[in-house]
Image (cartoon, rainbow, N blue to C red):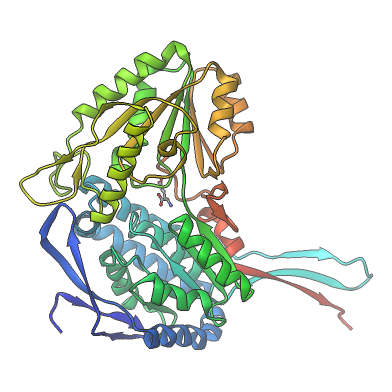
Length: 481
Ligand code: UN1
């Protein structure tokens, strides 16, 4: 095995496979990040079996030992944030400052859940029967399968793995086939953290092999998935059919309402910063900007001027403000939607062009569309690229109705200086997260994360809310004779 080849981690051992996935840098296709072994079906079954046999001891381990292990992982991530941030930017294409920021977020998540390991609380409550005591305990849910997407290759693994381990579960982790390098690096850190063999297992590979086995196995008690809506629906059916517990975060088409009384500069910052930045590859991106007539023209002009100035380039170049699209498939999806938007009468103010750069990569200039309506295909469907659509609404009520008219409901936002409208929007928005005078993307790690409607399914992630998914309650009745 060459040092370019990275193995899977099963039952405390590194195990290779003959099926290697080439991880290429989307900023520079001549740069091979590494060769990552796709786990075989047998290795995936072995990982599940290892997690199952490690469960009794780990679920009974002292919370202090769990806390120390998670803290150690957080400390190492933080110390190596520049190196791992560069690795992240190389494999995923987000700019280096965002890569480093994401590794920092992963470190903070491990440090947060290190402390949560010490706060597994229960409840003691009086029984209706005299003399009997009732308690409600929160116990580990068991073996958990964690399936993560390519767009946050270290933060999303961290926000699933850290609470899973903190609450005494054992883990079978499948990173995205497209971006396994950060997941592998995290697994390597976990392999040296003091975890007993089998508590944490890494199985890289395709959803159709590894993900499918995790979803179907009755030895996997719970599955947490972040990814596309279509894949998510398939996994949900498989897990629910066998009675497993499931938590899912999927697509978004987040609206940002901009009212006449908004601070224009802040509104432009939010509209652009929350959409085309990160190459638009965030499920929380505010891709539908809904503006009232008094600010519409100035906003559209400000957004286009800002977008035209954004420097699209190699993710590792500190001068770049937007990196490449993650791969050829996503680039062709983006171009298909740009064609649809042009065809359905939206007015393209800038961008949407494939760019040549010194290195071969998937470079696309950010596209701003005006005069869109909420029935247009490119406005209704999630694109996951640097494309933002601006719509006009007659007044606040119409803007709110358009914002809520979506099958998705992950996040939403409003730019306004009116306290009345801000409060009303927070109450009546049909999304799981609401932002006032902020972009809809970019969340804190210590508070609940999740959406409504087709965006999410099951208990919330992150913060203290993660306990609901990663534990199961037991009600104990005692008659002390
Ligand atoms: C963020 O906006 O800070 O895939 C996080 C995504 C989300 C995470 C967004 N699950 O884009």
